[in-house]
Length: 290
Ligand code: NDP
Image 1 (cartoon, rainbow, N blue to C red):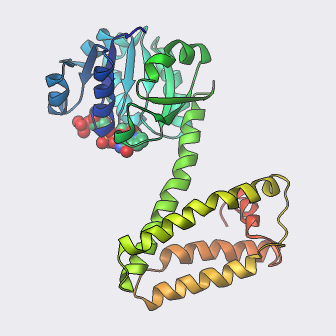
Image 2 (image 1 turned 30 degrees about the vertical axis):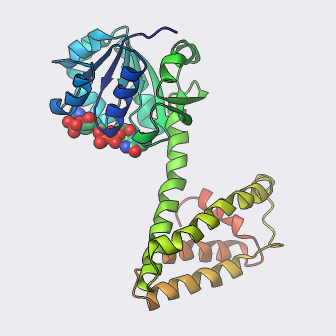
Image 3 (image 1 turned 90 degrees about the horizontal axis):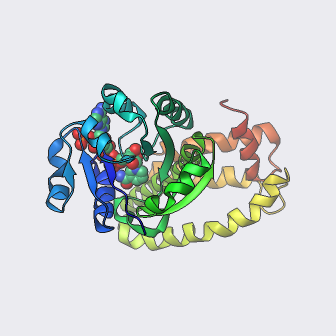
């Protein structure tokens, strides 16, 4: 197995975990970070600290970017643009699909090739094949460097469009943040009623675990445009969530989150009739903001 040199630009929690994984796998690792001291531990483990971005780019053909977003990439790389020619940028900074497309085109204008990545694990999962990173960009480039990418996580190649990995990542984040927020709201509501997070969380985990059967049941019906209320009706969902809003209010807990969801339920009910399934929301959302 070849272990080409790798440069990591950006040493937040993610970049540090990534540089560490490459060191563990026996690669020569060059690092650069705006705040240079964040490289200290990695240098102690054998990484080379580049004094400048140019030096970091010159050290390795493969350059992993782990920055806050694409704007940070331009800030870091624009001044060193002449050193980009011939580099392979593995951009693991998250951002929108459109910014990923612009970033890939920008890299190409400077003679660099670009793979977009969307990492689906916190730093603790870096170095484990248990988690996947979405990739998109030129297929030949992905295949050529897949072994190097696999040092970080498993890989899930989504296609040539540089925006795809970012899109799949954002789709997961759409689900992740709203779900995590719903859980935090549930904890606050439980807490206001004297129930500790550790007491209620096993119930939360049970409900989330049971979600898969709902997804399996509804997905083919949604694809078929079948939203009949034979198993549940929007009117029931409206009444049920209204109870949640009132329970929150009665408990002195901010009801804004369930109240916002309740507004979308009511919108679906108004648009499509209360006899439909809640899955009608899929079409209501797709028509844009009310
Ligand atoms: P951070 O935002 O903590 O760190 C990002 C790095 O970007 C730091 O090295 C920071 O430098 C650098 N940076 C930010 N702005 C600039 C700038 N204007 N100029 C120069 N350098 C800049 O992010 P993480 O390490 O947590 O994550 C990196 C990427 O991975 C993000 O896009 C994030 O969304 C994504 N991600 C993170 C996960 C996580 O759990 N942390 C999970 C999945 C994806 P400095 O040290 O000097 O501030």
